[in-house]
Amino acid sequence: MTDLQTTDLHAADPADSPWWRDAVIYQVYPRSWADGDGDGVGDLPGITSRLGHLAELGVDAIWFSPFFRSPQKDAGYDVSDYRDIDPLFGTLADADALLARAHELGLRIIVDLVPNHSSDQHAWFQEALAAAPGSEARERYMFRDGLGADGSTPPNDWRSVFGGPAWTRITEPDGTPGQWYLHLFDSSQPDFNWQNPVVREEFESVLRFWLDRGVDGFRVDVAHGLIKKEGLPPFPLETEMISQDNTALSPFWDQDGVHEIYRAWRSVLDEYEGDRIMCAEAWVAPAERAARYVRPDEFHQAFNFGYLEAPWRVADLRTVITDSLSANDSVGAPATWVLSNHDVVRHASRLGLPVGQKRPNGISASDPQPDAELGLRRARAASLLMLALPGGAYLYQGEELGLPEHTALDHHYREDPTFHRTSGTEVGRDGCRVPMPWERDAPAYGFSATGASWLPQPPAYGDLAADQQAGVAGSTLELYRAALALRDERGLGLGGLALVGDTTTDSTDADTAEDAVLTLHNTGRGGEHPTLVIANLGTEPVALPEGSALLLASGPLTDDGLVPTDTTIWAAL
Ligand code: NOJ
Figure 1 (cartoon, protein in one colour):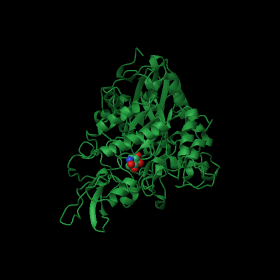
Figure 2 (cartoon, helix red, strand yellow):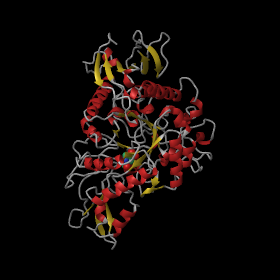
Figure 3 (cartoon, helix red, strand yellow):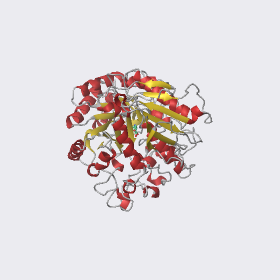
Figure 4 (cartoon, protein in one colour):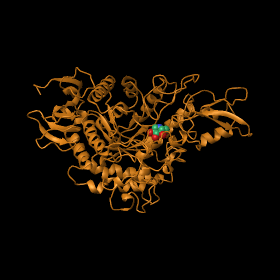
């Protein structure tokens, strides 16, 4: 490396760092992974039966989107009982069996905690409806009187993330029009009042309930939303699903008061053995604000949504990698990279849309369609780049198969409240939540023995089924398996990172070498396995530096061994 010009971005972690600092965690969306009882909705026994896929893939842990008791108005992010499993998914005994089998396979389990709001069917909210204004039961949620002589105007102008007003008026027990309650999401998801100590006690008890059952951690939903600014001042702007826009201005996102809640939770987790963790879902910008969530006595991880949002351009990728590492280093936390989840267009489709276009909230048949081939090529390159970065990474189910978004779903299947609350202006998130294809020639591609599937799978999923890719050289599944094995072997997640080349320019003009190719040097765990990472986003193929040996490529090299456009390679030095 002496002849390469480098700029250090991040120093290596100690080789004996705790598991989560470089963990690869796989998100299972329970209703869409594997259906054990044939009703068309995935469930816990179905998941348990297919855990071998994840052990073979080589991930460290699984994050489950919510499987708690819920009317499923927002696919389980509307919890009516935090201490029970929804019958749709199984029973507490099924959860125990899943946990036991996962642990046998060496996989840790992260569950999803939804503390900003409950379902309107939660016992506390039902009590609140039956109680009087100002009662203890109402004080657990955000009830307010309406404005105007008859109270018929909402308490303020806040908008719901899913569209429409963030307030709904109730009918009092005596039948008269009554108070209003706040819901930053759907009207079936009333916000808790986190200024009330009773709410804090309840959630600490919920944490203990799951920690006692043996879970290894929590992904915390809307971690930036629990505290609302005093006086609930006006904020007329639309609040998009899900974006980092406006977080700096908003009176309900990223208020300083949230942090003491997480400090209290951290001390609960620290009482337990085994490095239990919390990961924040906090759509907060800039990186310095997001880093406040991962200070040493708060969360262990926070999703780096800046990376997910970055356009496929060298300058943008370089900036987000540099800024995230520097912000997190300032608090001693690892970065946590992610490209897809159940809320955003899958990256195999997103990266097939014109570069620099605003990320759409779902794609429908009448929208301009992504370029599927280009999208997959870029997605594989983006994933290989991500897996070479120091820190942790989250994978979303199906990305290891290169699954695209379902972009032609009939509207009548749509369940995302966004679609209904925006009268279809935003099609929403169903297209990224379609059930997994396991076997090309089985009913519902092996998702369910009966062939039932709560959302229909697009025909493209047949050839992408896991059984079509396992053992096939060059398949996306084998790329991910090889990448995870190498990442582990070379300790990329704990390595130090440097930018290679002249990084002084900051243009988005892809014609200059600096803006065509992103080259990184990862020292590997303990500096033992230096790895060169080259992501070619330019129009011309590029050569591997002399003396380097190719380890893995996201796509085929040219006949003369060059790295083609939209391809990432790892090479040993
Ligand atoms: C973020 C979750 O990821 C999303 O699916 C959900 O709709 C909202 N939070 C509300 O809980």
